[in-house]
Length: 336
Image (cartoon, rainbow, N blue to C red; front, side, top):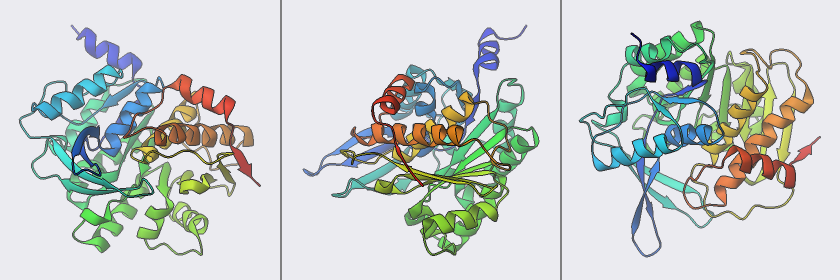
């Protein structure tokens, strides 16, 4: 007889996420370090669930105190755990220093940690029987060359199964010992994506040709198999590019009061994915001409989600209602 918990997961999961879950030790001016739940994929997972997207987190979590906090954070937001039983490996840690502009700098402790205690087979099996699973997300530290055997076969299996593959480049060059190998591997991983999300800083790190971030994004999109690319541009807003050649660019009407930018890109992507699911977009959406109103709603939802995040300390993802209210009260300005 099928486990009723499994039946519940099967009927409610639209998105599966795979990647790091860790504790951010955020430095304060007085020398204290504040432990916060974090990791780009972990933040994305919570952000999706808060926007009422049925979400399954695929990686294991530790039985240590930090792992228990990470698991509870996911469960409290309504996330399903593919590995509900904790593992013996310790929780991954990051030390985060935030500069005067609110931008974080990271140092990671990632050897022998819980979220890396998985395999491509385990990830693929967890997704296999989920009838309503239409989209998978990964990126950030999962794009380390050291984890290629874990994530690349899983991505290939998801693409073959007809699911939309979303990859957030979200580069971490400061913790990769061989930067050129890292760049090559990220570009290889992005070949599995239907949707790519990257920042202007990511594109600069990849050494892509182009006079500016928009030109670099166009180069990356057309050198991949993706149909859509979302590009974040910091205070200048964001852009959505399609393989067909359309470009939509937008920003907030007025400057946002930034507390810090921790998790902003993760919340941006959650807003984008939630809107994609709401519009029931096909895997190849963007290969042909797309409706401007749909593209603008996707981009506006992503920007609103990110703006709400940067107004709060640490990554506190907004709810679906908060994003909707932000869109209503502070609509984005679209740049012709």
